[in-house]
Length: 184
Image 1 (cartoon, rainbow, N blue to C red):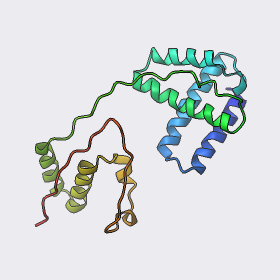
Image 2 (image 1 turned 180 degrees about the vertical axis):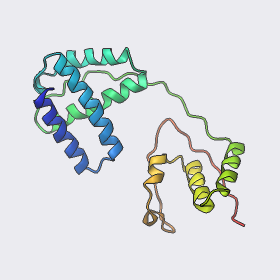
Image 3 (image 1 turned 90 degrees about the horizontal axis):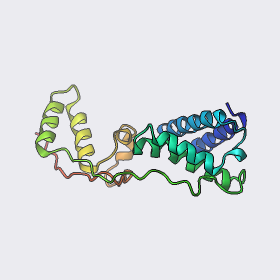
């Protein structure tokens, strides 16, 4: 595998850890960048300066033929970030990804859980070993549209009375509104 490219990938991932990127983000970056490094090595590219727009477009075309538009987009987006970082870090004069288009993603809004289904989920949570916690988690998911990984990362200190907690704002979800029944 391309040692120079791998060296820069490791530097980029260290930079991401320093910036506080989540472990899931870093894992996605690592996976996408390593797959590209394997492809580049197969094309006899030996350094980041050897990566051209044509190589990146050929790679995009290859993965576009095997992955869904969302999968191809997820594989190419870290490359765009990586090469812009190399430009910002003055390793490259100009990112070869600047004029490489990412696949267009279909715009669709995911359906919300219905009130009836939410009622069933809350009823099932009421029968668990931790009914109050489980119901609170379901209501938070339902009312805010927070990602499950974000919910799992919430600490008790994050939930102080009067505090405002903001989730990432994904474009493909519209949170539903639901009022939790009063505890009896």
